[in-house]
Image (spheres, rainbow, N blue to C red):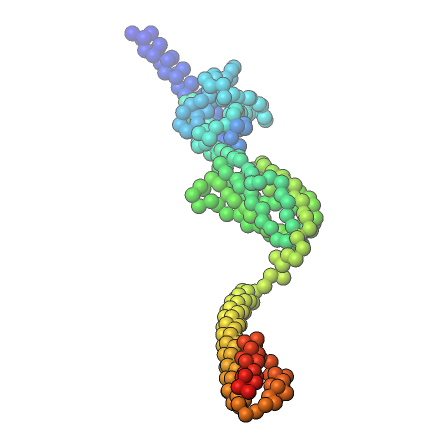
Length: 341
């Protein structure tokens, strides 16, 4: 009976020794927050004092890697470890390969038989696409133009800047988030080029020394002759309105003048035709009066007692020409006296 109690005492002493030894080691320095790009590596260090038996690494509450003094216990090839010694302490490093967006979250380092742990936060950023629509550009020299750069699929949205590799008289840009897509941004560069060169749109990840860029060539050409679209030469709005009103009034005036001229031409033609018809009627009236006069004259010259009418008839013939029919009548009248004799 006495030996039995002695064995139990020995077990209790051993357990107490293990508990005492287990509580003698601790975490001296835990992991630090990290921000990495998707697809890259993330590294976390945990420094513990001597005497540790087991180090466990957990991601979002799930143990993904365990380390013993002799070897690591790997359950996923994306999670590996490395060990270092520094000043009598042990440094355990967990390496996450090919970081995915779903890996973002809490990282925890803990020791077996210890209620002490240390944690950090892993942030994962995604580098999306970058594009200048239309590619290489051809613009007019000394005329303002806009160049747009689109960045989409970035987490979080990047900061966008421009690298101008050509002579300009003015340049400025502004960047905004697309309203319906918080993972996309648009930057618009306004410039007045004076020569050929390149334009580079640069998207930079926030908190990281990582960026992506896209470059296009810009070629300037001479503006067309007579162009008034240069900066400072465009007409103000009031001048354009005044010109439009003036042209409208001028067009109305031209139409009125054309109508007046047409009316005058028609009226003149009617007057001319009326005058011509009057002249014709007057000429016909004069001719009729003349024939009536000659007829009366011939009727008055018939005298049976007059024996020398030929000279007078000749004078009348030379005084006014008559038709052949009148001449025949005259000759007939001249013969009548001789026949009476």
